[in-house]
Length: 330
Image (tube, rainbow, N blue to C red; front, side, top):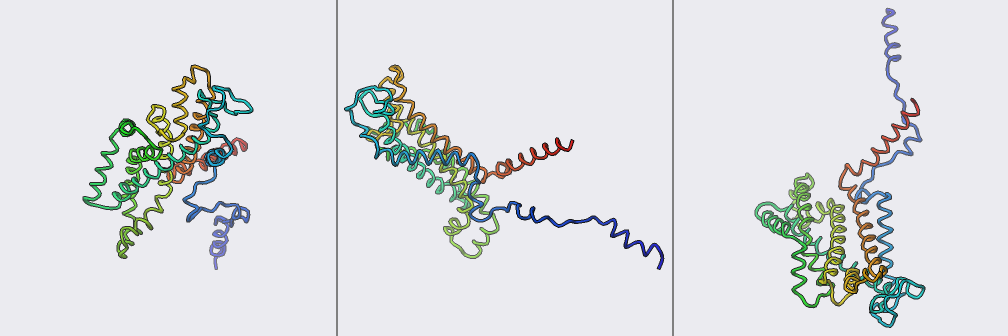
């Protein structure tokens, strides 16, 4: 055997790259990808935690505070009293306790938002998911109705419908807001459902003879759950702000107390001119805090829907770590 043949294996072994197995610490600390139901839940982040705290605090206030305050329509108190130990948020022009009205108004505004959001999301499912799953003339008809509702200006329509009733309950206001705010969500859901209907698992379910209703409920809707949740939260925000705007214009509920009706009473009672800031500032702050909380939760859910938003925090942390490491090694 020649010397070249003897040294060849040694050269191959010497020049071969050494592959080290991953360390035990790296295997233990590596973040496993989430799967199943956990993959559809938003990751814990400052936005999500802050939004949940705000919304949960307002909901608890709406549930518990009415039992701890006086009758919101009681007029036996002194009028336009500033905040004090007896009346924490002062009184109105008629002597109503502002804290009591704020607590009962929280219930009314939340109910309007939930009912209107529920109506809007049901109509969005009907005209969005069905239109995206079905094909042919049925899709064209549902898409046409959605497009017509999408181009109709919402606020003037709501004002016209609300003004046609002399007496308006919060249920009526919620219904009007719900039937005028579904078209945008239906358009988005139709596009997503159209994309999902061409997937392999949906085609396999059709070939297996599954009914259309079961295919929609089992194969399509679970994949639309994050998007549905985001649209539902947006519908609640729109309904609460819409009710406040209608009530401020005098077209809100006439037999209920909401944050919007408190603002309308403050405007008609010239609270700003009288310097009674405690009459209109608290309901405005509550509307802003609730809208902020729901928006933060919606942003956290958007990270599930949009992969770029989901991967952006990890990419930013990696970039900062690389920059820091480069600065240290330099």
